[in-house]
Image 1 (cartoon, rainbow, N blue to C red):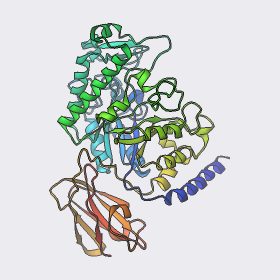
Image 2 (cartoon, rainbow, N blue to C red):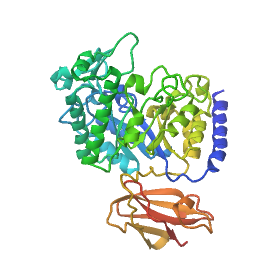
Image 3 (cartoon, rainbow, N blue to C red):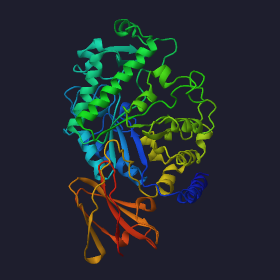
Image 4 (cartoon, rainbow, N blue to C red):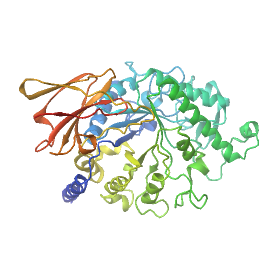
Length: 494
């Protein structure tokens, strides 16, 4: 029975290949996976594994996602006012060593290690920070004497079984900005990324205990608008911190999938979500997009197509109408595999990808969560690797950050069919791209298909005979800079 099921999935994967290959080249598409450290969801797999095991796990994780066609990882490096790196502001995370405040032994810097390994494979590293969560579980979490809840207990509020930073306090916002600035100054990251946990999700029958702060700082606003203004303030502050410290670094937010329901606001989506960003988490994502305070948004559309309360297709269309010329990627519920009849359908994720590719305003996907990929649920990894992500793709550039096109590389023919490429410009590049074109078409990016990415800053060699899918095609090369701008293509005469 199990063998028959597996063979069926392979057949379905081949059928998906036919539909996928017929689509136009997608040289630019964000393809990423969330790697959660909180509660050891993804990495490291346990609080109790050795440094060598941590490193081996991360390398294995990266290799898996690279093989599946990903071009970025979003790694949680600050799960609960703690750090997976040496920080002067917050203690070592318990999810790394089993005890908060305890450094790894033998000592190493996990974030430095992860960035190096990620960039060596040509993937982007997006540093994922939780903005307000401070103690993950008050009954079981390890809390160090140097943790901020011990040093500044007045900054925190208890809600349910967790402690949260009080979003109303200016000192809380300034502390978060200091943490972000420290990361930007010390690490070669590609983006700062925050998730959906702003004000916490409501607990039935319990009010978030910020009345005292509201009376002190409310200034006559109604409480809900005041809470939203607190979130607006920290997003604007973090945007300004990023731009003034390292303007190359992107700022992304991954909100809950529903901004507002149409029943509450004519601008809202035709959904019936029990909680929403605007009304419950006090995160006015549309304002942040409209103001240009964030560079990309990844709404978590973890529902299936046809869901009665929050249909994937309905929400996909709504977000495409409200991206405000910032980059829109879709968050997929990979972890939902097998959870209900809809998510037992092998076509669910492929159909979601097909749907988003019908919109020019959607530029990619992010999948939650990394660990699930190890099981290849419903053959979805095969489908990505062999079909939808068969050809590599570059992360879409952001022209408002950098739109300078790098210089064309220099081509040198060597013996034995080798081609040597050299960066011919002053700007540092991150890779060369190898493209194939049909005969008789103009040499430009929109006519070409990226087939190979060679990670380098200066010089690289490759064998023309080993270029994928080269038969009957022409070959071009280009330089790719840190913002994924591509030089003019340069044809190699075969």
